[in-house]
Length: 265
Image (cartoon, rainbow, N blue to C red):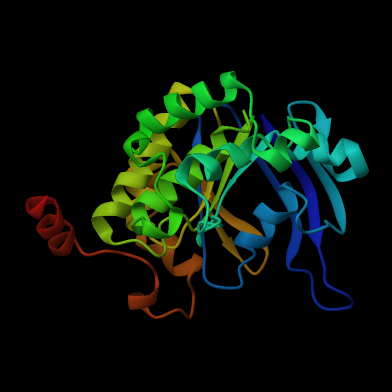
């Protein structure tokens, strides 16, 4: 369970980017965060894993208060938070297996990490997860030889190698084509159920959020103004979340376009 209470993030003397934000994410739930650019979606995720320092408030992950940790305690806590990035964040010159095993760096001695001499149990787990997401046959292929969808699958497996207690995904489908985007969203939904993981996804595509997540959180100017199931996301709710944003920039895919993509699969 992730519990966030009264979270505030302010850069210098500027207006707060996150304003007294409260959110709970239970296990096995897939939650989408939507909102216009500048709403605070990415900042929220980065506060959770402490890539950005919260100004005030509480972030509790399964009984551990994350905001008070530092040094070694913070490094240990970060192992419990899997992060999936829009830009994949792979090392291009390394193989798929080497990139996947980098998810274990926080668990092995420095000499093993430097020599890439990982325990056999880690290698076996890596193969198991790669088979699950359909990339085991690319184990010895360089990361820069993969397609966008394949690279994102590597990123998902790398995050899972951390044995996380929560998965955070920051625009995981933004650079992918529609068909691959749906495949990645379906994968995240399935993994949440199989591994009993809460998954928090910052996503621009509202259509995908409605289809693949169980709950949608709408943000505007650093506050949560909508928090409910996808069927409650009415046009009025959308207009409030995206007030002033042109319809074509709201991440909604028309039914006709969706049908054409499905038929072409």
